[in-house]
Length: 242
Ligand code: SF4
Ligand code: SF4
Ligand code: FES
Image 1 (cartoon, rainbow, N blue to C red):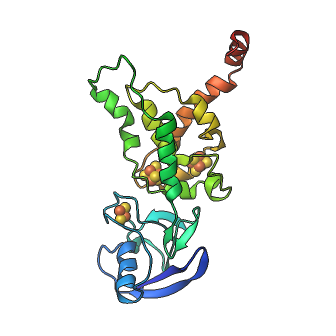
Image 2: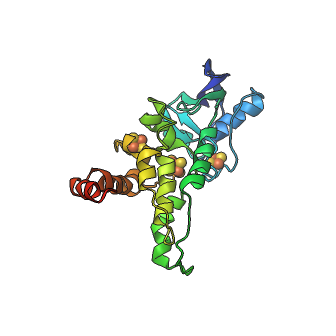
């Protein structure tokens, strides 16, 4: 048998309840949660879709670590296995958190600094051009990185910082070979990229193994620093008045 402690409750109020589920070879945490839902707790709220680590909807905190329930094997975990909702977000019920901020943030980025092709763009893409953004396109928007990021989780700066997943999305737009948008001032002023202090916690939990900090955030932070904090460039801007 496998012992689970599942968070039950609404709007942040609640408690952990213990369940026992028969072990099956290859069992993942989502199997256990769905067994509990079908046998013991018909009203247990849990979000999932693909069961293949591709839709990102089964994100939860498992033994304190943001993880995908459908990708986390029970044999690798200490018991009882504690499953709770993503804690950075407002709680709705049981294992479901309100992650609608993610959708709003993505929409806002598309509206404000989305992709605009260069006027002279030749629409023939080379393999090496496609390669540049390939890593960032793997993002499944599971929100694990957002949940673990202390800027959002502890400091709740959702209005000031777009968070690692949407910096990955911005990095994807930046690497598009036909991109014409200058996002540097947006990254500093609206996306709040300077709130990131490169702790790399986001990279550690990414199920797609995207090098969020090294490949997406640091290069963009460097571009912001070059423009705004390089003393020579600042002097030139002062002289030319830009
Ligand atoms: S960057 Fe990784 S952890 Fe973050 S949302 Fe995308 S896939 Fe999930
Ligand atoms: S590296 Fe930056 S974005 Fe990633 S968790 Fe740390 S502060 Fe957040
Ligand atoms: S159910 Fe789709 S990622 Fe887990």
